[in-house]
Length: 424
Image 1 (spheres, rainbow, N blue to C red):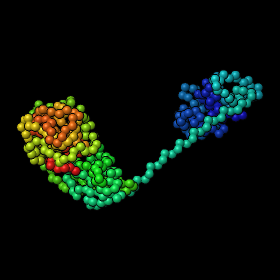
Image 2 (image 1 turned 45 degrees about the horizontal axis):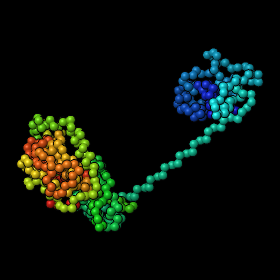
Image 3 (image 1 turned 135 degrees about the vertical axis):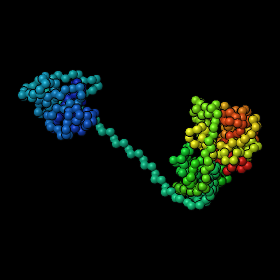
Image 4 (image 1 turned 180 degrees about the vertical axis):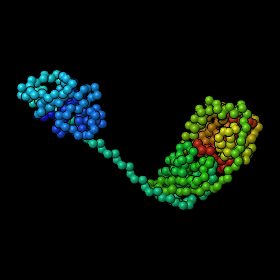
């Protein structure tokens, strides 16, 4: 009985002769590579083959550590044997008078079937292992519904009425209003954030509210000049609305001349950890905690144009935006929480100085920089108007003032637009 390529390869492997193989009728490079757990490229390289054609009786090297053996002497069932000389010679001894070689014992629990050259009594060949069942194809994702574009500040999506601002400017905070049955189950995204310098761009947001009226807060990042795109998904319907931006002329770049003592804080080793801590706090979402209009943090008005101002802090440094509004005040002036919330940061840091950060829920947070004294602790609940600290000049500051930021999902918005307003 003629042994299959797999049975022959397995037998030779157990006998320590797996380094070479004599080609039999029907063998191909592919079948031999598969039987010996090799690649076709490996067989070509080991045997210096210039083509994939094989000849019966051709001896192939199956391992880089083995020399090429001669062709087998038995034409009926060729068997590779170790050469005695470097030149391959064909045996002239008839197969009938040839003495069989005694095989080594098979491993325990395994039945070894050898080709006829090793045994005068034919034995059934080892059956080829069953081919693994083809992996079931992964279920295809359902096709995405077509996206419709609506013009105007009010339209419907799946029975839900959507109301958008008619126009916006960079630095604005705004809300997407949804009313009607199914409004709570809507999903809202801002695809226009892709490619912009924002945290968590194009985040999928869930509206919050009650009694059929729900909102999602939005913000226009500083430096944005293109329209805001809002995508609302209700059931199987996807609609995009477009909010145009008002052109906002940029003012001159303000060049600050910080003293060497203050400028050194820009490269303080603790700055990276400070920024990472604040950025992590920006990820908080949850439901809004406030129920009243936002209030002023200090009695004095802000310096006009301080929010969104283009600045350099040292000669030759890159131009950056000023993400808060500066409120001049005397040293020690009480600083009050702009609305209800939870203190998530309270401490002294290299850049922001004495810092308190309040999480108001809904992705809205307020930050109070440069304090000389902090009067609250992390985890403390505060109410609108509670004193949280005192005005100072710590951190990157050249004089007493409050730097106030109000951010939506980590992006700065104009603080003055929040004061005395029940937002949203």
